[in-house]
Length: 246
Image (tube, rainbow, N blue to C red):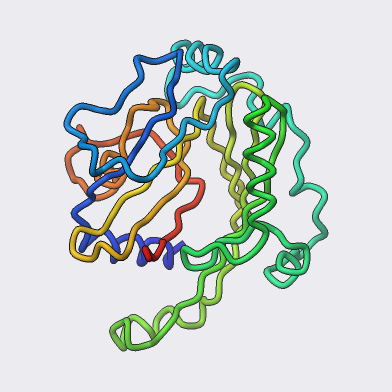
């Protein structure tokens, strides 16, 4: 995942991390925007992706589940995996041919309708899952030092698969990287976005699995950059994209 780290670090190094969020009214929380956020920072929608009738269950799950403790039954246990149906050696070309949902260098390049279908099923409280492909290219050699480029050029392009599960009350994110499988379980998924302070024409948005629906885009990004352990937040990125403003 070197490419993902390179991209994120490079983008954030010039970001003032001005977050934009607009919470969907939520009967299970106090509602409204976080203290200190202004109207000018709310122009992009930021949603709690959880059906109205399921939010109280999500809150209960959050309260009784200690961090790092695996529930006996997680969403990945309750929902049929799409990944398990894929043939061996399934690669990027196969994913494109199948119109899989693919994010390539922080741009959606395929299968956006499959992500939309997943969100629709979640909004209706249905158990569901979606496969997500992540494709990384090293890009222009001039963007890197000669030494670094030579050391990693043979490792690209890279393609990874992960699967996001929803069981009606909570989420599981399962990443399949080479011969390793990693599972993460959270009660909520949120959408957050942010702007570049030095270049208002560029913004970022993404979906994140969290335990606290009140975190902002700034909170999430700063948790990656800060060396202060007090800034750490327990979350996982589902995917992030960059957007060009008109």
